[in-house]
Length: 93
Image: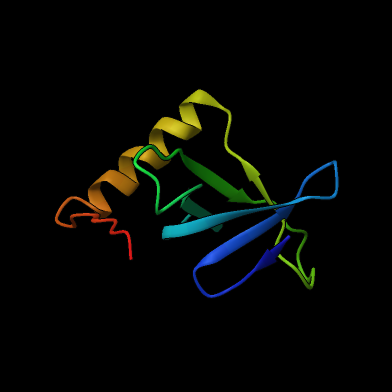
């Protein structure tokens, strides 16, 4: 996976690229997490929380979707606090 300025790009099993837009990032107990959206232009978008699972010294970051309910809730609560005073406005240009 490749990390660009405001996006992360995954290569799917089919070899297609899936681009996610980074909304926020944080570090908890030495682990990096990203809050991403699959589409910033559409009316309906899916938010995901990704966890950096890279090995130390690895050249590229490796992220996976957080699926553990307890971990997901804890990180989602933290992102909620971080973004509490922020209004996310998505506009179509």
